[in-house]
Image 1 (tube, rainbow over the protein chains, first blue to last red):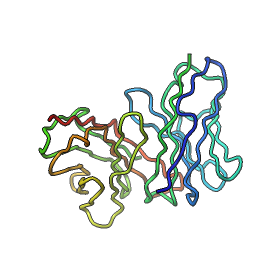
Image 2: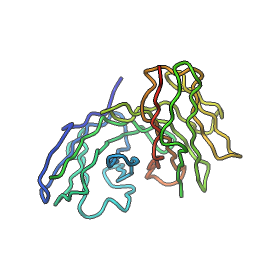
Image 3: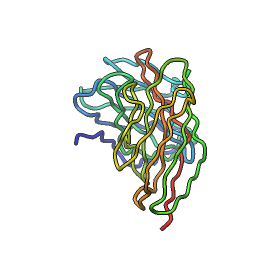
Image 4: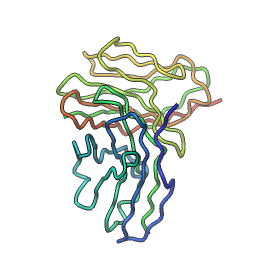
Length: 114
Length: 115
């Protein structure tokens, strides 16, 4: 069964540095998402991406964050000037179509900011 | 706006006993509802979904959920718990409007199965 893959599984970065989290969505999916889960808290929506542009973003997704689909297969989340509170599990998801379709999640990238 | 409330952050059941995980939603429009399971160090795996067809939805691993509009609930059940069911369970709601399609997750319920 096709799956969403995320790399790396764990990223350790010094505060203030930039990180890029990578995702390969399921190949025939059209919608892509990033979520984050701070330890012990719920999964929070960051951004959705469709037709090569952001279709929705949350308050969390400020100017520090950006997403890109650079080559038709990868979907990346860039976090500039990382802060301690950016430490979390980041999940990528994709879905075939719109809101009635389940989102398929990757195993996540654990981001640790030191 | 949509939101989900999961009552009970921790639920313990004996092996073979009924599993009941509660989820209530709030939505200004008819919702789409989902249950996901998360095993340690893994991503979210879809258990089942409600998208306005049958109100009783059957999912994987013997789980099912019933959509009750009058109670704004979508509780997850399984007749007989198995040790392998121990995991974190998340209820999520999605909007039928717009193109963003973000999911709103509950805070999760950790299920412990006692041998």
